[in-house]
Image (cartoon, rainbow, N blue to C red):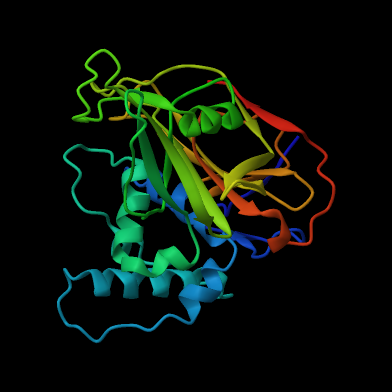
Length: 308
């Protein structure tokens, strides 16, 4: 049976784990805020995030709607989270923009936070990539300008590694080449990662255009191999945001944190379950860190199977 950490009145309670970089603190759900809680729990455990935010400069701008002010609030939250303060944080300070529906989406909220940090997130998260297109008719190649991606979108597949492989595989596209070889004037396009940070985040395209969820059993590897500049970089899983429900407009988000022995901790708003054996919900957002960033111990799991 898993251990549960919750005060009798339902208020947040801190739980200490020796194999996590920072103690876990549960967070209240003040109404349709589970997406926010799950994302922030994973970010806290991201390598370098707490140190970066603790040392980040704040702005004296008085405009409460400015992105600088939102960054200030995020800095305040991080400092509260790692403190021993018994006072609860005013979570309303971390409200997201209106997304057009009652429950905001976790990926939207994560992108919103990165936007608040402006380009600072590039020091910690994501990859630099470009795409190359080669005409099948004349062989002409066109490369796009390098772009920084904070979140890598993946189509739902049998496993995370297979989804990434498909993302990086060549696909046929229109090149609009003027070589005149009409029957051969199409192209192959391929994404290439030229640089990766200590943390990479993958988000499954879990929902259809009408908002319904693609229900599929997905195997999530505890380790991922990412091709960067024709070299393989090893990453290890440390955080998962799972979605429980039938569509993007409803349901519930839960965070799962892996400690350095591979044990899984569930953080469901104000309840923390230690060393859970069953993971509830469909994996939606995956957080991986470079293996050399931490002093690794041998995993006691090879993969985690998420079942809806």
